[in-house]
Image (cartoon, rainbow, N blue to C red; front, side):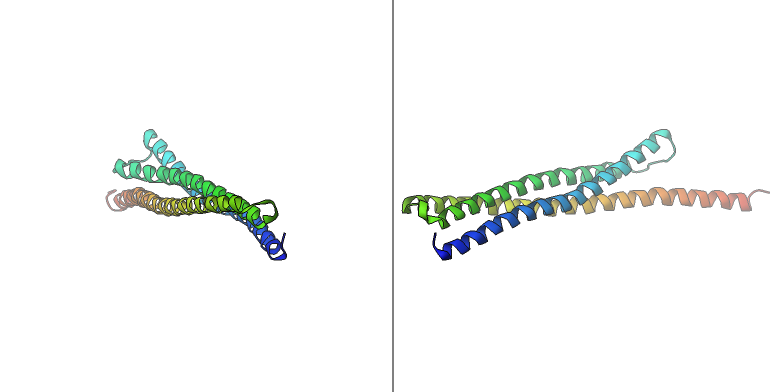
Length: 180
C-alpha cells in the first residue's frame, strides 16, 4: 500500500470507530430523554385517570386528557422510528467506509473491482443521506409532539388545581362570613 493511501486508510479506520461511538452516544442520550419524559407524562395521565375513577377529582374536559395522551404516545412512536432510521443511516455509513478502506488498500483490487466498489459507495452514501434526513425529520417531530403533549398536560394540571384551589377558597370564605 502506498504511503499516502496508508495515511488515508488509518484516517478512515479512525473515522469508522468514531462514527460507531457517536452513533451509540447520540442514540442513548436524546432518545432516553424523550422516552423518559413522555413516559413520565403518560404516568401522570394514568394516575389522573385513576383519581378520576375514584371520584377524588373532577375532570371537566376529558378531550384535553385524551389529546395529551395521544401526543405523548405519538412522541414515543416517532422516537422509535427515529432510532430505527438512525440505525440504518449508520449501517450504510459503515458499508461506505468499509468500501473506502478496500479501495485505499488497492494492492488487492483491479480497476473493475475498484469501479464496482465506487458505484456501491455512491449507493450507500445516498441511502445514508436519506436515512439521516428521515432521522432528522422524526427527531424534530418527536420534539414537537413532546412539547405539545407536555404543554397540554401542564394546562390540564393547572386547570384541575386551579379549580380545586378556587373551590377551597370559596369554602373557607363561606365558613368565615356565612356561619352566623
